[in-house]
Length: 334
Image (cartoon, rainbow, N blue to C red; front, side):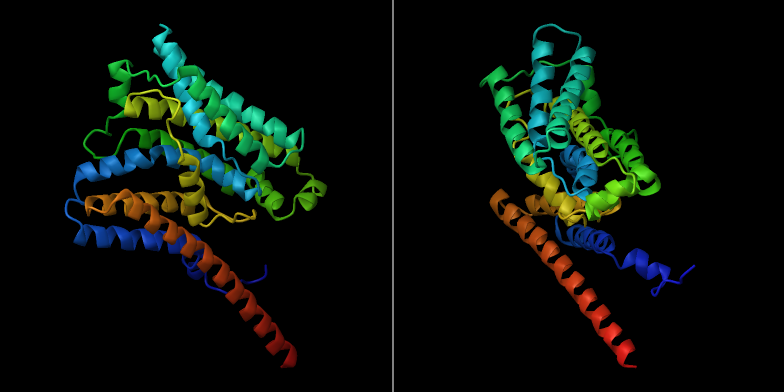
């Protein structure tokens, strides 16, 4: 076995993911010491509730971007799922059936995206921009300017409940289960390793035996299904089903995934970095809101953090390549 040049702890800590987790810890400490009421249990509850849909959707989005694809339609799928739940509930269907239908609508939407990308062979950017508009248009067209707000109280209460004795929302249980599943699949299975191989070089992955098309198709269906589930949760959390629900959420999801260290060019990324990225953006926003900063300024600050993270990653990659080149020249001359 060839020994690695750096100690294990440096390889584990001094990474892009480690840097994001470090930034999250710094932001939390600064907020706790400078922002009034940030340490309130209510703040933790609302922070986690707000980021829960983004956390859920970021799981399959991470896998998709690692394969050098993207799904821009996720927020529209959330809206379509929400509208489906609302219409079925309004028309008297059992609410449990309406929730299942909401998730299934998401799965169908993901299947359409996956078919167009992997069977028809269209680029995922173009496909999901189109389906973003199509699903949003269907959602708005089905309900118009109306909103359905009458949902069973036991289900809305469950969506807004906390784990007993803690300020942590109950939805975090579902998120942790899904995070473990996606984490094991990505980091501990041949399927997960094939995603990195596809992202680095899909032709090489194909010739090494990876079914590239089927793999990507599965990821798009998973993305649609999880987005459908997030749509059901979104509906119950805010108590309304509207065609405009979750507008712009796709940008928040993609920003968090990239901030968490996933390369937009594929082949690199880890789920723990993405989770830290989502929490970092959520924590910055929550702290600034408590400090009285307006939403526009929060968006600017969040955007600056994202740009700096992408630029720093590129700079570090250039720095490491330069060091490796200089080291190789030194060894050659020596």
